[in-house]
Image (tube, rainbow, N blue to C red):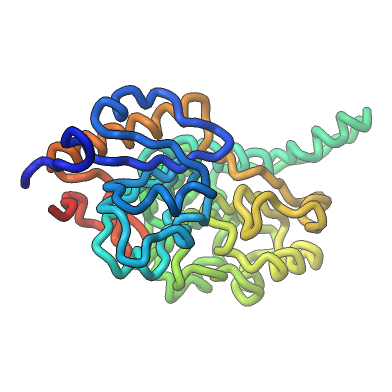
Length: 336
């Protein structure tokens, strides 16, 4: 495959969609390509003639509205693991390659989930509330050793969660597209078609699945009714995996014991949401994978992929646009 020769001086033209935070450490990318930094209002004007787009502002929905009618750039890279915001029909049906930032968030999110499991089991949210009220109230807490966790989503993040929870003593199972009797990270993997049975056995249900037409709203009133009254739901995947009104009702009625939610269908979570004030709910602002240095890692991954693009080598983290995530074939090449 021949190296890319585009733009002035033979360098590819890369558009970077920035938000409130500008990416640092882009010197190598700027050496490899002509890099233009734009905001949402400038994106439509910048896209015609561009070879690649770096969606640094990964929460933006602007790409769909700005996409050129005759087709867009060769390649779009997003600074997140989820790509649901990119999979509008014109991009999915065209030849544009999509890559994501898979691999950067796996271990941080797994650590975050373990922290939430421990917080629930040891009732830390109540301890902190009582401390603020200067109240001394002795309580008994739960063991996590032997508790059962169901991780929905068998990609790298789900696998990292399974390994971390298993190492802490939980009995881990998974749920995904492909059933497996023995999995090194997730024990038994149940097919999503039989999710109801797996939900009924879990003390902790962890959502780490991508958002696709098949997974949207998968945790609804019926699924919540299958969960144990003592179970907790943890969502570090996508907010729309959960039917939020159904969850609010289930929590209010005591159908499940609690929830920890890092993602929501509407972000920021509206101040009017009852989830803010529920004593059995932990609300966090989409931060489970954001550890010190994470932005630098995102830039390094994009720069590595840009070097591969320029030299005609296989790109990392090529997304199957029909599935909505990186498929099993990892050596996918960009089109020439």
